[in-house]
Length: 118
Image (tube, rainbow, N blue to C red; front, side, top):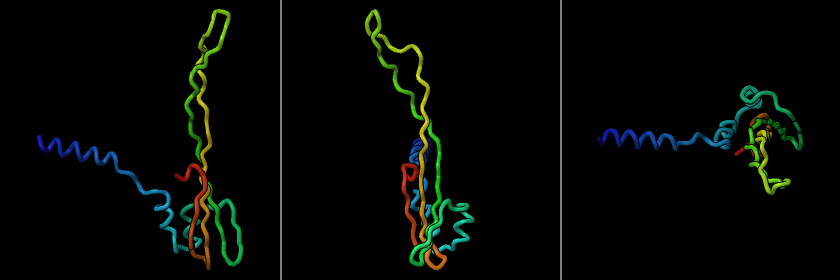
C-alpha cells in the first residue's frame, strides 16, 4: 500500500515539474562567440552596429488556434434565437523577438520582446 502511495505521489510531483524558462535557456549563450550563436539559432533576421557593439535579432513566430466565439442571439420574427451554424475557430500569430548584444565578438547580454517569450 505504501509503495503504491509513494509511486502515486512521485507521479503527481513529476507531472508538476516545469522545464527551464526562456531566460535560463538563453543565458547559456553569455560569453559565447558570434559563430556559436549563429550555429545554434540560425541566421539572424537583423544585424545592427552602434558604438562598437553589434546587435543580432532573431525572431520566433508560431500560429495558435483561438477558440470559436459562443453562439450569439439574434432576434427574428418569433423572438430571440441563437445562431444555427457553429463559428469557425480563429488563428493568431504569437511572436518573440530576441536581441543579443555582442562586444568584441562575444555575447554580453540579451533582451526579449513579445507575447511568445513567456
